[in-house]
Image 1: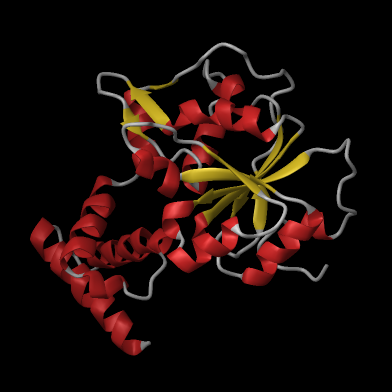
Image 2 (image 1 turned 120 degrees about the horizontal axis):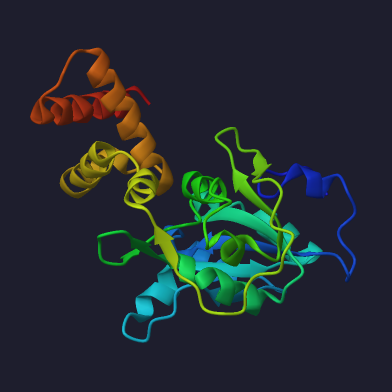
Length: 255
């Protein structure tokens, strides 16, 4: 198989696993795919989806949220050929568990229980978030989240796939679990509030700024522009937002 950015390089340089080896599973956020790409994904032979969000009151969560897709050598080659997943492909997971069981294990991480605040949906699988969660090995939920996973690969900015590192040796607990977070960790997982607010405001009011920008890259562009605003000595919120708008507009015109 020719090297492609869609899967970890290590997988392309070693034989595809035999039946007794770990399964290889893609974590894909369906809402980030356009309709044609989503149709192509579900029509790819040899793959089946297990949603991580299941709420009968909000069926769109299953249709647009994250899903696990177990792949074979043939189906991953087909996915690579499509080149349509983009930033919707958040992770590759290696595990010997049945994928349905893995989906049930990961599902609770979709809801965070921060101290002193009501429960909130959390895209725990985002690269920066999963790395912060992994860095909390003494948390009571760490084994529940990562147990039974042999490796979790996340996409780096240079398009390579990087492993999180050693996983818990113990199997995951069978009992239900919750992702209980301290206020400081929850705030860290949320990221810079100014970046979140500016990205939301600009996306809603000036969507043309991000017409050709992948959804996962929007906040990165805004963050870079805010850093430039800081370097320019701007401190007022309105001034900083206006600066970001003008900078992004200029970048678009230069393309």
